[in-house]
Length: 111
Length: 113
Image 1 (tube, chains in turn brown, orange):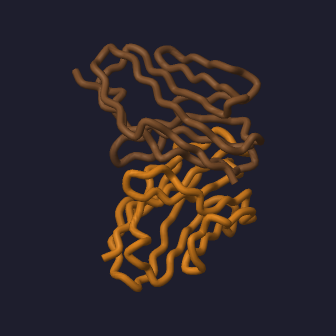
Image 2 (cartoon, chains in turn orange, green; image 1 turned 60 degrees about the horizontal axis):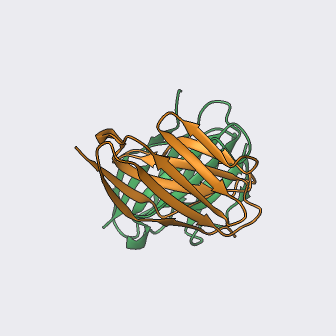
């Protein structure tokens, strides 16, 4: 089955700096890679996703890149704000309802 | 409703007690998933339904865990004879169809004492 590795486990940045979170996956059949943001006491919320037919996708301050050959994908947050502080999860699936998650990155943005 | 609703939000059970956790998916969503999230970890897959059919239960950790979705909408996750290691947040997610666009509920935090 799919195995998703995520790092770093914690990340602290100054407000306005960029943050990068990286994930690797094992199953070459995986073709869908979402990112979720989880705030305390809430369920994960989808913030951006990418499918394997594109290498990069951007939505305002958030971007995701995918390298299918190397089996890794990354989340980039620019101009970070204190409200970006949360736990971020990457995930991978083959669209067969087999989504598996990384262990999470706790991002702290210091004002 | 507008989102996935889970109840109760918090549940404290004595070891050995049976519990039932409820999930109300988004209306019309065909797929429903249960995940278990231990403290400081990512969600771990438990089981998946397509309408009322349970198509994958490979993630259920033991035969004490049982899930159902009899009418293809509301789902219940039941844990019999709870153990301390069952303490976790249980997340439910639904999607319109297929393996993308999951919407998660806020979860049920189960504490077994």
